[in-house]
Length: 127
Image (cartoon, rainbow, N blue to C red):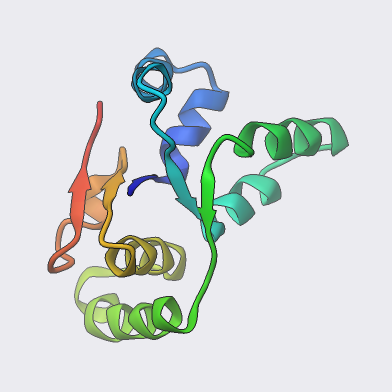
């Protein structure tokens, strides 16, 4: 499963061409991309009005949303315990990383440096 980090979707909303090209590539291949439910929440929180929220809800329907499970929660706690003090791992990033790890997926993030220190996490910077 291929996961998209929040930053790429924010770039898409800002009409940043590399993000548009990256997502269009996967759409053209009819590949379904996934997001963590924390990404969904971050995007909802970023909405400034009801119109933006409605557009965001509609936009995110094309993604498979992977919700919290006990195993994702437990993995998040382990990642925070292991990497927060040494690397400054934030809670949202830990949840996204745990979701990808538990799903045995790949993460696309513009801020790959926020994740590269996490053992066994497959993370790529798409642009």
